[in-house]
Amino acid sequence: MTNIALAYTWKKRKMKFLAFVLRFGMIAAVTIVAQQAAIAADENDATSPEFMFRQTLAEYHSVPKNRNSPERWTMWKQLATKLMKPSPAPPLERIQALEEAILVIERAVFQAGEADDAPRDKALADLYYTYGKMLQSLEAIDCTTLALDEHSLLIGAETADANNPSQDLCRENAENA
Image 1: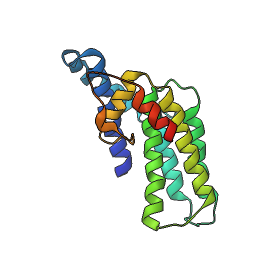
Image 2: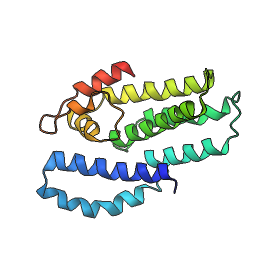
Image 3: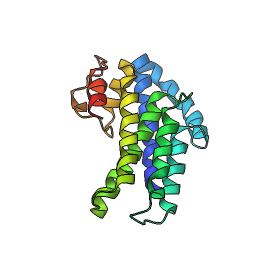
Image 4: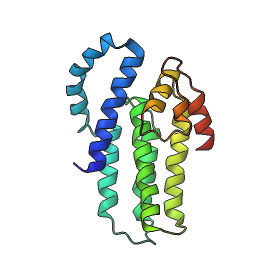
């Protein structure tokens, strides 16, 4: 498992725990331990957002890094499409997969110092569009949970209040995505 996949797995577990604590309080949070086995089983489920992200990342790394190759970015556009479709996966898991995908491409841009690349920019735009659409549909508790995650891409996340769940931050960020 790659470092990115491990970080995403940890982030996913942490988000589920935070959502559980916000919804049911700390006393009930001890039951989260029993859910860890279910989370581990999800990691190999082909329909889970984490699995889709890891599969896309592996495909991305297998494609030659030819700057003029549109195939280098196609899989990211496909991931955005898959994550936008109705799914039994919780919205936070789908959003986290989108955040990880966005970060992979943004890192590639900054590390390589690449100039304009229309296929890459289109793939990134598709990911941001999907991210924005999904942020708009989040419930207040899920938006607050996402904002409280230290790895969240939400701008203004530091203003989130666990005691006062709100959709405002997600809606503001959706408008800017």
